[in-house]
Amino acid sequence: MNTVLAGYGLVKKYGSATALAGVDVEVGERDSLAIMGPSGSGKSTLLHTLAGIVRPDGGEVLLRGERGAGGSRPTEGLDRIDQLGENRLSALRRKRFGFVFQSGQLLPELPAEENVALPLILEGVPRRQAVERARRWFAPLGLDGLAHRRPGQLSGGQAQRVAIARALAVEPDVVFADEPTGALDQATSTEVVRLLTSVTREQGAALVMVTHDADVAAHCDRVLHVRDGRISGHSQYTVA
Image (cartoon, rainbow, N blue to C red; front, side, top):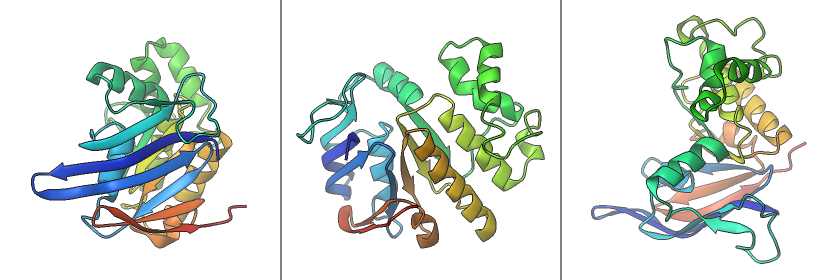
């Protein structure tokens, strides 16, 4: 596996509560990893720590370097990111990571195409060029004809597909998805997760997803089970 993102010995405490108690995890290129566990198990903390949103109290988070291609040693070609300053870490999240959340978190006042283009605009891409690039995602994600609709005019499944487009617009190394189907019905949930896993793989991005739904998790290559801040087991799937 060509490792693109890794966490080793991750520890995170909130007061006297331990959310992560020495977790090791590696994510490969085009890999899709689901993280499952009961409420309070540490699964969301693990995702947020890997994504550079939460800083660990112990251990390290590493990301493949700009030119690193991975190697025979676990950390070869990887750069430590958990000790970066906030400005550099924020820039890294914008450029190298994409995010999909349960609610989509689309801006209600912007049409779908501008919601997708927003990460590009924030990186300095001229608005017209950013919107043109954003529109390229609409057909592959089944969003033809919806570019000018605002989030309030979209169904839940359509809004999540717009959120997926936004996450992929910057051509990230890793897409992080936190309960991306939690607000959807079963049929729409299946459609969205199939799309999310297939499109990220086609684009060469890794996917790290927190979910409480075993049917959703089964669409990923691997499932990591977390309990009491530790890895309690894992499952491997063969994805066609």
